[in-house]
Image 1 (cartoon, rainbow, N blue to C red):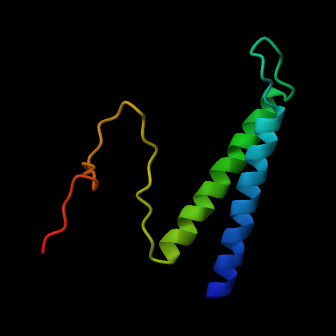
Image 2: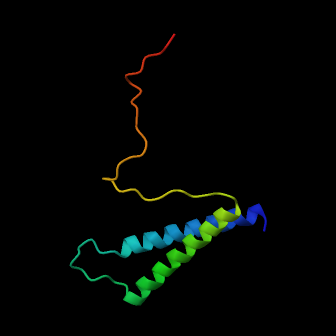
Image 3: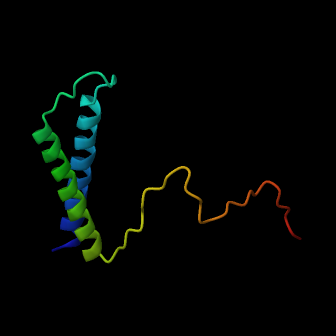
Length: 93
């Protein structure tokens, strides 16, 4: 397959994932007492769609030789890197 096909497929997958996420976000009731409008079967199908999209995105990345190490990080998780503020640094002559 050509590089153009991969980039086109990647853009399609990204658009599908973003659109599906927006639909889920729009349908989610703001009040927790309100019943969710989708059936359990539909929720399961949406999750399967997200799984299929992410699996194909991983396949495309592997075929392109890219390795994705991005992982979600919790706010209370310690950082691996240390941030050094640059405001206190002075220019060396």
